[in-house]
Image (cartoon, rainbow, N blue to C red; front, side, top):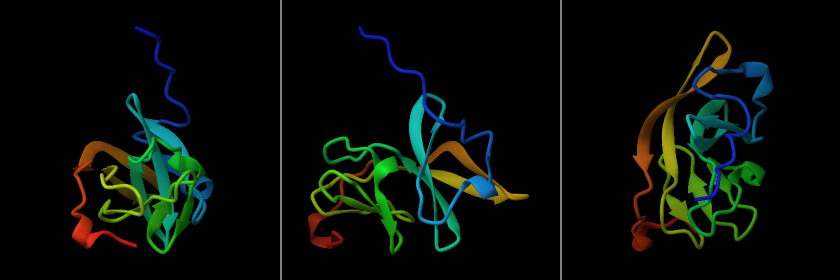
Length: 125
């Protein structure tokens, strides 16, 4: 079995200073051994699994717009609040609890969603 790479970026359960989290710019970090992206969109902070469920693209390099994060590879998109998948993806990414306290954003190790399949009749376009 190959060695796994150490998690990249800050430990998001320890918190990230508010000043380090820019609007619309994903910040790659980790929660335990899992890569997680912390995102501020419209003033609210979200924590989402860092890997696109379509073909494994790096969501930390994606575009954040209109409440969603878009994969840079095939433009799959994921609603930051619900995880609902759109575009070519049909599985939601893992969403984690997130809170801000005293100008520090924290991601929780507890998942809010855990990669459910999205009903194709209700997908975002």
